[in-house]
Amino acid sequence: MPVRVRITLIFSLLVFIILSLVCSGIYYFSYQARINNIKTRLTNRAITTARLLSQREIFDRSLIQRIDSATTLSFKNKIVQAVNYRDRIVYHYSDVPGDTIAADKEILDNARVKGSVYFSVRERDAVAYHHADNTSRLVILVAGEDVEGKQSLQNLLQILLVSFLVGNIFVLISGFFFSKGLLLPIKNISHEVAEISAQNLTRRIETGKTRDEWYQLSVTLNELLNRLQESFDMQRRFISNASHELSTPLTAILSQLEVSLQRERTAEEYKTVLQSIYQDVQHLTKLTQTLLEFAKASGNPGGLEIDLVRVDEIILSLPAEVSKINASYSVKIEFENLPEEEENLLVFGNEPLLFTAINNIVINACKYSDDHEAKIRLEVINNTISIYIRDRGKGIQTSELDKIFQPFYRTEESRSETGFGLGLSLAHRIIKIHKGTIEVTSGPGEGTVFHIQLPSAKSLEVVARF
Image 1: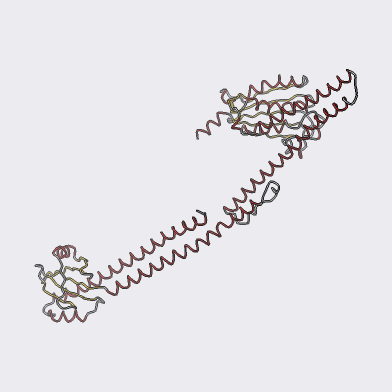
Image 2 (image 1 turned 60 degrees about the vertical axis):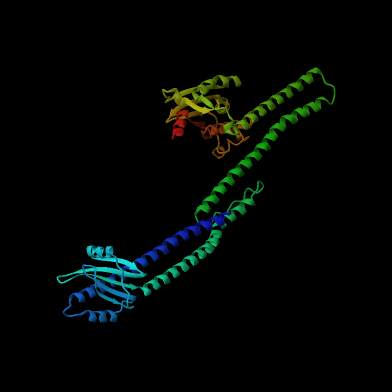
């Protein structure tokens, strides 16, 4: 069922219920008002008749009958009847000759106890009123057909029914057009999104000026498009740079082989060519391994082998690993605010990937530091593991700080060094899939500090319990 039809039906159903309650309430209170009005008028007529009957020395029955016949109560088929304490009729008047009120004993007894009782008899409203004084004890029965009141109530019922039907039909039609206007922004958003493709990601959805739910939806979709555009741009840059990095050693290998095969050469010349090709193949192998690690870190975290990893053990293994790469590289380690409980040094993650991320930053620190030394400080505060990696290099320009985590990006100062520009980008992605963050602080001539924050396994367990 279309959303437009569902909104219309729900809106109409709510109005149907409201109108039903309102119309029922109006009719009910009007009916009660008619009953109360009849009770009052019939009771007053009964009181008047009882007082006249109690003054027998002034008014006789024939006079009272003439008075009743001349008195109008706006009732049809009026009956006035008096019954003594023995339930005998002592007075009677009716518009129709021979018409009487057949009141049973229960009604008469209730009237004597309660003072007055309302009841109905043959489609007529009636009241039994008990009157007692020094001379008599009478129950006055007054009945009549409230034609005018019933007709007014019937007219009201017809008006309410017509209003109810017309109102629901009007609401159904207006709700259909109202839902169209309500869903129009979604239709416009759908059309705009349909026109956006991978080749046209720069286009954005109009948000409008009213900050309503449609505005929030448009903003959310625009933010999604920003992330998609950023991902596509990063992918294009990555493919372009990766293709360039891969083609360079392959081109060099192919050129050297073509040149060496053009004529016969000595064994020494062939050895020189093979050594050069071997270096290019090593470079190509290392680049391929780095790209595989980058692809692994960019994949779904759910596909990784997750286990408890001790961060301090990774830190302690870095000096030996770094010295294998270059004997002139050195690492100094400091521990501050370490907890007594070892579980606070544990994180949920993949140990080889975490080691690769921290190791890449440390190698960069050693490579670009003037003394080829990196300082690592490990501390734990409020279930958050912080790792600071500092170097004494030339620093990074402020304009380049937000670009160093892009794949294949290299600063002007680092272009003379060997590398592919994937180390920091790889580290950033690895830390991100471990729910951590990396911040960098640097300036020309001030060195660089990388700050890695990882949530401890204990903090994640506390969140999971809640």
